[in-house]
Image 1 (cartoon, rainbow, N blue to C red):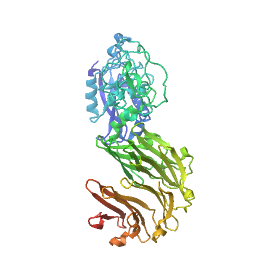
Image 2 (image 1 turned 90 degrees about the horizontal axis):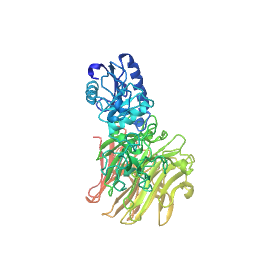
Image 3 (image 1 turned 60 degrees about the horizontal axis):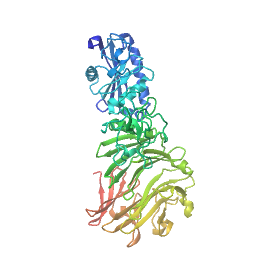
Image 4 (image 1 turned 120 degrees about the vertical axis):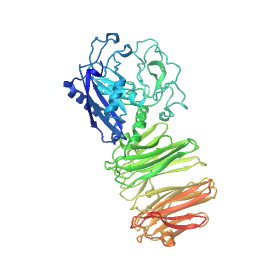
Length: 615
């Protein structure tokens, strides 16, 4: 009945290796277990750990989760079961004074929350959530400042549900309070719930989980035709559809849940997409990223009209998982194991990321590509309308297997209302293939080498677009290297279609020993439109094949031109432009034998420069 009815025996960490000051720490506390029954409590905790860490999204958040048990020996076994709550009238002297029958409902299992919180803080000061495990086979649990669950059938499912309340403020999504036959629960009050997974709002534009609702999904998605009772009809849409399903928050009508089913509505089903994201948002920022085994890549995800500004850094770990370290200004830095999050197969290639945005179309997507051991090109991709997806694009289009890493780019032009995405890869015969998409005709597969009668490639392809709104310029260029070291381009414009060029031969340039890298140097206000193709020769020199409309194609040995040292790695190029500042610079990076990073960079005010940026 009070703390005199038991003793705290101590705390034991039973799962996790996250730093204690940077972890989501779950503390399980025993109640109604006598000194002789502590092994039963230990076993119950072990079962909880197994169940929780196998439940999405927790399965992808394991590195951030520590789980502790606090052994407490009570005088008696069990919990109070008052007659007033429909129970047997049994009583038990326990440390946390657990009792069924809260608010007259037998399944509502309550305890002395203050004693629980004080004990948890004393044993595990950094705890995130405290859950009391009650030694009774009567069905029950509750969530609030403290969670509780009993050892009834499905005990771990009860526990995971109750943590949804206690740790994340999730609401019950079932449409009744005391079983479904109670009065006063026909219509939800006209007040928006504060919980993130229930709503009375049916306006698509302001719906709190609107980011997860596809434009084609009707709202409401399912309405109750008889508000005097619970709607027991099956779902009218496929499982996993996010929309508005009426009957939630203890009411038959007027309150909506995100999906037809969810662990916050029924046990032994998955969390819905909205609840999964709430859990990720709480634990994800605590994730410590695992070590990478390959080079990272990065991209910016921006959209002016949406006020969207994010940055994403991708890398691959030893188990072939694609991870992201990503940032926005609203919630800071996050870590995600996107492979685990989406149940995707392991990668054998480094990832490449790109964004697919178009202001006029209000389009905002991000795509992460990788290759699996069977040569298939896969994508992990996201939009705000339907969330994250995984696609095997090779299987989807019946394309051949790749032997090199994929490369992705978008081909967009606001003035032309152009919006395409292109995924390039190389097959065993050296052909360059593309899996590409537009909204008018969907996905396509092309063997661009065969299409243009081009020679075989010995390196992975590189793609870029050459666009300028003011000039109405819209071109795409696919670069590759052949066995003789020549840099070739397969390129397209709408005026004359596809072309093939041997740019090395065209400009009398020396052979390359590295794969090519391409970028465009454009500035609307300056009417600037150039394209630059970089490569490294056997002597470590960085060369450029570059073009503008005023004087055509040029070849430059930029290393010799600037007296720079030899490179031992492949070059990388980017532009640094800003319309309002009238800023227009280009930068070419490379690595020397001493590990220094050098830059060959240009502006119109002072020309070309060389810098050893490591100094």
